[in-house]
Every structure is written in C-alpha cells, then in structure tokens.
Length: 227
Length: 392
Image (cartoon, rainbow over all chains, first blue to last red; front, side):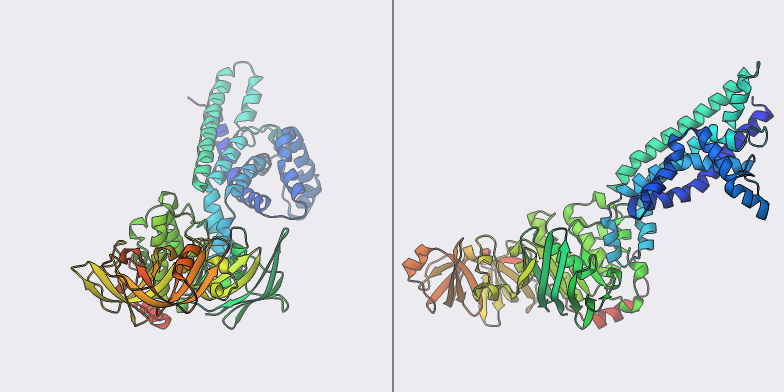
C-alpha cells in the first residue's frame, strides 16, 4: 500500500515529532511554571521570545535559526569551529526547528494548567512539612498534569505539520530531512504523484485529528481534576 | 504550652494588625467578628506570613524576632494548621492525604499513629474516597486528621465549624475534645461563634479591628467589665465539666457531680450518655442562660429536676440584654429581664434558687475509654513499639 519512500517519510516524521515533544516537554513545564508562578525582571521579554514562533511566519523563524545556528551563524559558527558540530540541514536541525515552533503551544498550555492550581495548596503542603520542591512534585505537577499532557499532544501535532521553519533551516533532503509535509509539497509539483500525495495527506489528517481530540479530552479533564 | 505574641505588628495592604497576648490553655479560642484579623494571627503563628515587628514565642522557643532578624520557616515550626477551606489535595485519596506528611517526619517525634487517627475520627470508611466525594463534616475530619499526622506540637484550627451544619458542628466539637484529651495536644481554635468556643474552652483571645483586645477566661473578662457585650442572648453558653455518679432507671435520669459537691440531674436527649458509663467518667455539659429560671424559694410539686441554691454575685447590663451571675457552687450565667429584677427585688448578695430542667443541659462530650488521657512520652513509646502501619 505504501512505497518504501513513503514509509521512510512517515517514520522520520513520527521520529521527529516524538523526539521534539520529549525535548519540548521539560522545557515547557519549566517555562510554564516560572511564567505562571514567579515574578522576575524581564518576565514579559521571556514570554515574548517564547511566543515569537507562534505569530511570526515559520519561514522567518527558520531564517532566524539559520543566522543564529547555521554554519556561518552567530552561535553555529563558534560551535563548528570549536567542537565541529553542524546544526543546520540535518536531523538535529529538524528537531531544533520543531522544538522552537511547538514550544509556545506547549508553554501556553502548561502555564494555564499551573495557573489553575489554587496556590493555597502550597500553604497546606508547607504546613505539613514539605519544601517548595517537594510541593512542586507532589502537588503542582500532578494537578497540572492533564494540562501538561494536552500541551504535549499539541506540540506533537504542531511538529507533525511543521513546514516553513524546517525547509529554511533543515532543508528538503529526501531520506534525511524530508518529512510528510515536505514530501507532499515536493510531490504536488510532479505529475503522476497524486496518489502518493493523497495517501500522505490522509495519514496526516488522521494523526492531527487524533492529536486534537486527545488534547481536548485532556483539557476538559484538567478543569475537573483541579476542582 | 505557652503561646506568646509580644508587640507583634503586621500590615496587609491598608490593614494594620497588632497582637499582644499570651495563653497557656490546652485549648484557646480566638474570637472576633469576620474580617477582624483572626486568620492573619494564625498565618503569623504558623509561618505562612511574617510580621513587620515584634516577637512570637512557643514556650521558650522564639519563632520570630524581627529585631534580631530571627525567623523560623513555617515548615520547620512543627505547627499543624487546619485551614478554613481544608485544602485537601484533590488528586489524592483520603488515605494519601492523611499520609502526606509521612516523608517529612522525624521518627523521634512520632506520637500520633495512623490507626489512632482513623479510629478516633471515624475515617476508616472514607479512606479510599477522593475529597470531592466527602461531605463538609467529613472533609473537616480528614483535614484535622491530616494535620495531626504531621505530629505537630500545636494544632491551629481556622473556623472548623464554618462549612458544617448544626448537628455536625456538635460532632466536630466532640471530636476535638476527644483528640485534645487523647493526645494532650494544645489547640487554638478560631470561630466567630462564642457559643461554639465556650463548649471547648473558656480561655479566649478576643480580636477586634486587627487588634488583640482582651485575653483570658471568658467569664472573668465579662465579669470584670472588660467586655460585657460578650454575653448575648442565644450567643452564649454556660459550660461545665462534671463526673458521672449514677443512673436512675425509673426516672431515666443521670446523676452527675460538679466541682465534687453539686449534684445535678441530666436527661439523655442527645443520646451521648448510656447506663454503662463508669463512675467518675468526665462529661462536658453546656447550658444556655435563657434555660435557667430563678425563684426566691424552693418549689414543690414541680417538673423541674434541678433546684440549685445560690447567691447572686453580679448583674450585668449590656446593650442587648440583662444577665445575672449566680454562684451555686459553680458560676452560672442566667438571662433575665428588668421585670424579673423588679419582681424579685434582685440584687447582689441575694440568695436564690436556679431552676433547671434535666433536659435543658446539653451533653457536649463524654470522655470515653478511647479518649483516656495519655502523656506524650507514653504515646511515643507506644508508637515505636508498633513497628509499621498495619492499615495499608
């Protein structure tokens, strides 16, 4: 039913989405936590920077990644010269682009999940002898868990559909950086590839739909859980 | 335990608070109108908040001394705090809520066992439920149990009766007396209902407009004219601790002894008493001032079972009513009217009979077997002998 090219594209896409979700999650929990519960100088700046990829055109995000992390970029050049690491146009670039574009969605969810937890539970926890760290892991994290999970599902879905930042920063190399979105885009322009495009589009729609349903379910559970 | 607030001052937004008092009672009631600063007092004592000035001490230990820049963190104060809203963790079962503090307890200080708490507070049937499945009274009991299992040296309860109906209120009062007696743990209880506080203790601290304005024995505070307005119709209770003497089966009446000399007869409409109670068992009673009638002579052919001879000690007028304090071997507040004063020519020093029906006494608590007094060392020893929790 699927050609070996299609299978490798689907496999790569899922691998990228899963890896980037796993990397996004701890970062989103940390950022969501500090944005929801801490007051510090430059909070607005952090929130703004995290959310840029949500509003800026993905191609712009990809271009910014390229001039920062590319071989001749501000940080990328240094990395290449000192430890020989190349971050653009490879699997690492796919992951980085994916994390950057899905982070704001995950952070927004984790932040609102932490905001929903009544801070008075912290008073109760402290009166029972728990430290702040202990309270975070035993009270805040479990109560915010459905919200965090829903953020992760959204990050996963966003990463599946990522196109603009990926094509600018990771390129469109078949077998190396070509995901479902890039494959569909490339084959759309080749006559006779309509069936392959249709199959991948159907797969894409099914995965996205499942992710959104899961996210909505977890969001409902989040409110129920906190009460 | 002596709790001391020395010239403590605090500010929250535009509200100013100042507290200066000390109390050493096994149970202290903090009384005052809503918004007077009672919860702020608890927050400062438990370490939820830090005052701007002053010193807070528990016995000889200084918890806060702002001048010396000495502040012990809340989690290290070992004070149990039952919040007005409970704050039971909604994601944990009752059992997990109760055992929440377990990882933070040093074994040397452990004297309250899980088994004792679930049996004293009748929590066993609730253990696997989630907090949202519990009624107000059940939640309150679990919150009290959870705070006690953190092995505190002092227990603070903020409005423990606010979210429970009248019958459950009586039940919580009885549970609190049972716990106080069994574990010998000092308690401070906030309420804006003096009648509830008085059923638990006569030692009170009064908070008004952010200030502690009086502290000590409630009856003394009223009698010495500091706060005569505390005694109000329907808002005041006479309370006494009595001991069980005998049960009269033909009359279905319990004979109880007060202050080792005064015998009173009480019926069992609250069903807390039973004929198997051992002689000498301590019982907490309350009586409303309106339920006492006065007469100049002992009545014959009456349905009233208690006719106690006494002497009028004081007549208190306040803006709501007139009360008379009668000494009948113990002090009794009696609600009267100007008409009674005129008709009986009531005056201080006058001999009088207090007429009380047996079923006007309210049995607040019977100190039963399960609530037998134990000292803390004995409890720690008992705890260390029972190696692990048997209920898992």
